[in-house]
Length: 256
Length: 332
Image 1: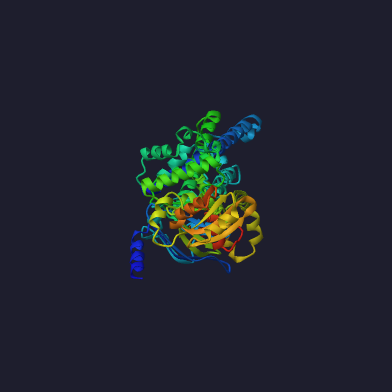
Image 2: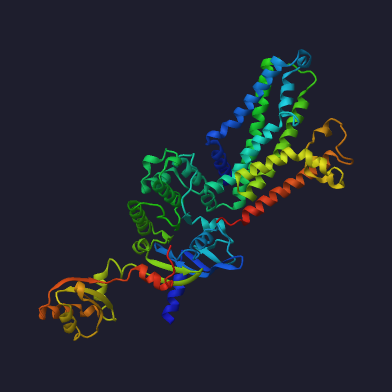
């Protein structure tokens, strides 16, 4: 266990020691501050009336709003995790240590998840701070519960997309291809749902199930017969398959 | 025969690395075909072969980067297939060019590998850094390292966990002559002082000749020959000549004299001599003669009043032998 901890520390340092480590955080901070500033300066008073700091968080996490940015940043960071080892050639030294390949890949996955959680928490904190500074601390329509649910839903989505990216990274070994393909999947997922909506199996498509938020607001499920438990199960099965694909490929791969 | 068998079973016990019939099939082609050899403590073994012979594939199979289709590799008795973590913990390696995380310092890179090994202390890091002479560069980013420095950091990285065997794929690739010599000296020192066995693949034959105790020659994935080099050939030539009086020990000698024809006539009377070549324009004559008869040859020349200007042994270099073994295929 101590050993695995060391592997995660190693992976974390590989990200942290890069000069580009802070860029995603800087991007989030700039977007939040820009958003709050624009709202304050240019939005008509009728819209901004009653806005609180929680609205700011909700807007930043809302997947149909600015929430996608975290996912994009997570994809960019995840894509490099495995592919960079290949392109730098460091994979050779990495895999001739007395650790199984599964442990090494697992440490990379765990590190990616840590990064995503950290970026989300950072966004949460900065939006809250920016909101409080500009609008003061008040709770109106949007409550703690709403903020937590939106954040959790955003986190789950980002986690699923990061897992897809992770698998693509293992399969393609190319950072560019991985980022490209993952972005396309994120952008096109609405279109995919639309195109497949006439088929019965649409219920079992990952993208149909990826948003869990409607279940908490008593909205109708996207398709007949879907429940919270059903969607969670579908997501779990897909994530399991993605990870199985990653680990089996990584274990079998010849490093030539 | 019995003696041979005994030696073989004894050597099996001592083998630090034992390659047992490994085969790699890619498509329909066998890149490596039933290759077997053993390595013992403190031995430097060279893996030789023309381009595409399967050297790199073999080395990558030994360290588990490539899966083998048949056979097994035992490191100190642990199988690389079924007991990878145990087996690889006795192995340090550089596979082709040493690649590090360029944005980290040399020290941070070594710390990465320290965390991945067991029982590696800070003192061990300073020890290996000192051994490879990189003390001054440890706080610099690897980006700023020259290839020679990266090679040294590669060696440091490979020695960190006190391996029993060091595996190096083309370790002198891209090094300048001074670097090559330095590398050779390290490796010899490591092998003799720390008893580490070293497996080197290279196509620099002269380099291998200076460095290795034994060479394993492969071609088209198959073992061609295993040859012991060293003592007899290089340093202890004189001693060996004396010891070798009993067995037939024919050497080729090149003589430069004032009169080739006269020399030839007078030498023909000696026993166990064969004139290999004459080049009158250079006043050179090459003879094959038993080691023990050389004083006699010199005496004869004196008696006949022939002036002798040069007398040197014509040695078959590893390159010549290599070409013979591999049937003159192009060398890398």
